[in-house]
Image (cartoon, rainbow, N blue to C red; front, side, top):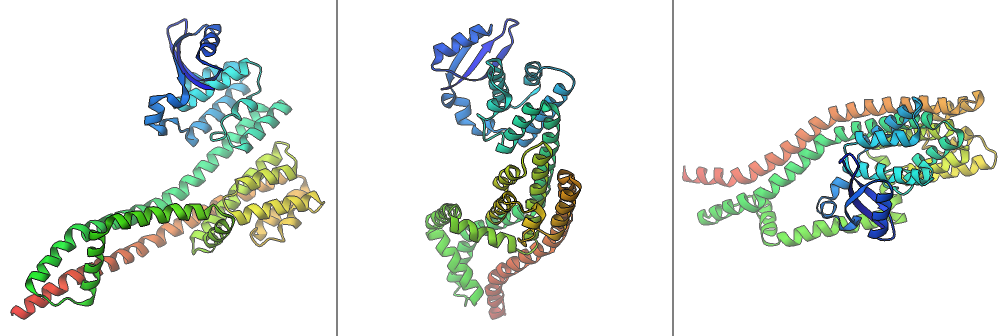
Length: 401
């Protein structure tokens, strides 16, 4: 079982982490054998802090990049793996990452490899990360593999950050618009409805529609909430089915502007990851299979797996990819050039850089296009509400005059 411990060193420093042991007594004996004085040992799932604040157990991509780059630098400078991990443990700030590093140190002390140690944390270290570490251990070039991994992770983080920042503005505007509309429907419109009823004002169609929606939300708000939550839950369940995944991923690729952005993102990550695997000595077929598992779109995933089957039969990578319109001609040509020159990894790196530039251009175009579109939508919504509210009052004033 996994046990969370806090112990004191000879120097009086506090140390905490997670270890695997049969029970608490076995864990305590193990800590004493490492010249540590146990302070408390509890089951990891019983940790009240972790249970109350699960976000503290999350390892961010920046933590993983820092861990990978610093470990690479220390190994390249001639430090042993144990010494490097010991120094790294004191530099890591995230408590969750500290626990992982402590666990890795314990495993390496017992004679386990780095790849087997990190494989216990699949939510932090991806299968490709673990596979590359294995390749680095086998070739004796662990520091170089870690350096390429750190570069790859940084590019991946930057790419996702670019897309996230582009989508942040419209998402915030939409959420605020929904919140404001909800508040108006529950608190403002009912008061105006009472006023109109008391004054016997004839209501135009837009006002009747708004009042009808407001009455429904005010009377059946719990049904609205249940419908939204239930619809979201069943949508997520359906999306995970084979049919749902195919339909949703097809729609995502066909969306105006967003579809192009999604496709460019997938191609950038595919080229970068595939090139990284091939460059570290992974067999092409195995590299394609591992890369396919990282694709966030089922159509690309299936296409990459089919390409791997064709390559296994003796077809070149470029020819196998040319069958699928999902792969643009520029990517296919770069792969073919790489095959002819024997530098597929370099060609794929250039391809990933090209698609990353394309993503940046698309994001700028998207940001520019979204602002007037959102303003128009907001303007139409506000205008509809104003007309619905003002028209009866205007009619009342006209009748008085």
